[in-house]
Image (cartoon, rainbow, N blue to C red; front, side, top):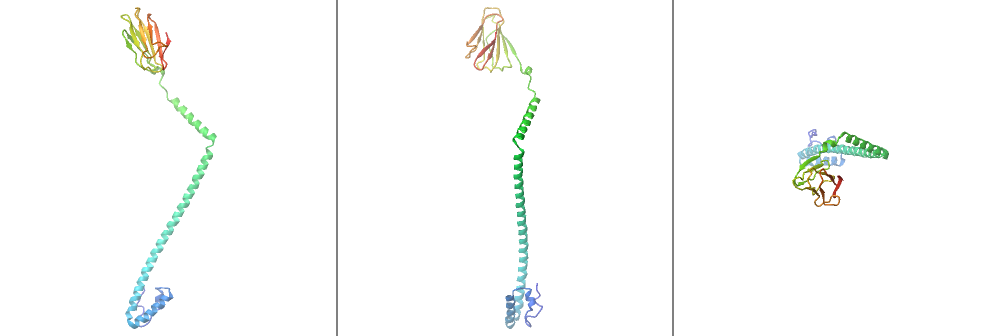
Length: 236
């Protein structure tokens, strides 16, 4: 704070150097000098009080100016940082465009085809490593001996069924499945020497155009296969 007691305001006007510490404005300095003249004639202490108030106000103003300068500097630094980030963003954008263009150049048609061919080769290698179940493991034929009517169930092609029919006591019917599986195989064989007939019944379907087949001779065999629409006699 400015020492306002450097001079006695009641005996002499304030030194201009003291006033210059408060303001650089010549008009304000003259105003303060005139104010000293007026106050020393009326109330000498008023000038000292006013001068102290002005000094305090100046200190507050200086502090505020210093804070404002600091804030201004921070704002300028932040602005520079933002500008730098924008520059970096622009560089990244340019780099991305260059990489995109480079990718387009690298992925020429020939290289793309070669890459696909490598993928196909890899897939083929992987498929070769996967061993499918052997046919011997899947193939599971079945055989039944019947002497009465028998209904064949639906089963896959790798599970063929042989029905050995014994009609010694009486004639009998072997009924084929109503909903057979594609390529299902059924073999019917008459094993007895009687005159009784073994009838193979296709139900709503047909066997080579006929609804039934009559097997009346001992050891006669009919092998049937479902073709998706009806039954074919593939061996007899």
